[in-house]
Image (spheres, protein in one colour):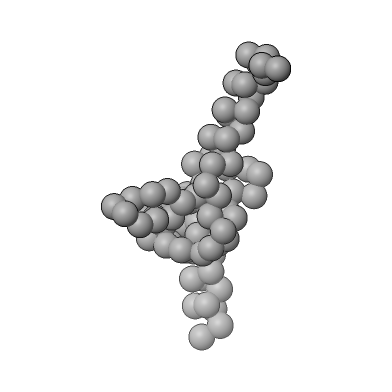
Length: 82
Ligand SMILES: [Zn+2]
């Protein structure tokens, strides 16, 4: 049975948003900050894989902007501890 058009569009959006969720941590090739497992994406690049932050916020994803904000907060905390 063929899926309805609405279903297939929905599936395509889902696949796009969930596509290649990174299972392992790595460094985002866009902002060079760490991407925690499952919070970003990975994609094929030059025969290997590269990791980037979430394209859209929400659903457990962390975007580059959010990662930068978190890194700043973390840096401030570490500074206070010294
Ligand atoms: Zn990033």
